[in-house]
Image (spheres, rainbow, N blue to C red):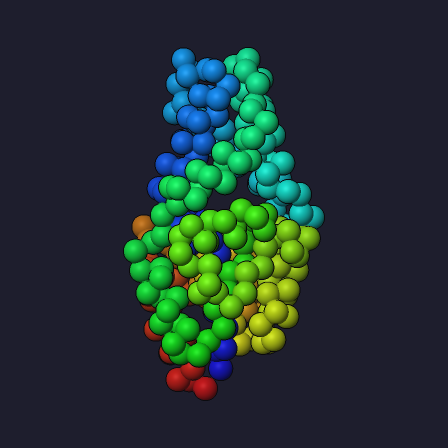
Length: 237
């Protein structure tokens, strides 16, 4: 019997396109405050993404390091390349832009509400700093919809380490086999969930990750498909 459903955040509840716009505006505002609006913010955004992606890739499954420190290091590397100082309030800029430009998938809120109406525990498991995720969820108007929010800061490790998933299950007081986890990263989300015995669901709207589908129990193109999976599993009991 499925009693709990947990979601990843970026790329699962909020769109990658919205995240791109957010990050572009972070760079744009950073350059403005640094007095370097002469620089091409799109070019620097791409370099910032490359630096950030490389840093986070190294942290997969490792002990938690503040994401604000990782993001700040990424922009520092770019700033050094172009000869400007990173504003001291860079993380404030980061959080504010996420609050302003974050974009939910169209069916995200409806899916969450439907799952809650079925009496399920609905939570989030995400690689995030606590202040960032709380501010972002509040800005999106969905913070109070979740029964639990578990971050890498809470767990002390990044996905796919088992600890974030186990901690979320502890909070919900449910067994691994009673839970489903939905994410967009097969290597981190599916692998991490299956390590502890949870069902794993990959959100892959464009079927762009077929090479890694074998890591996941279910593949969906929209979040609302998760409701059918839950109902199907509970019908089998």
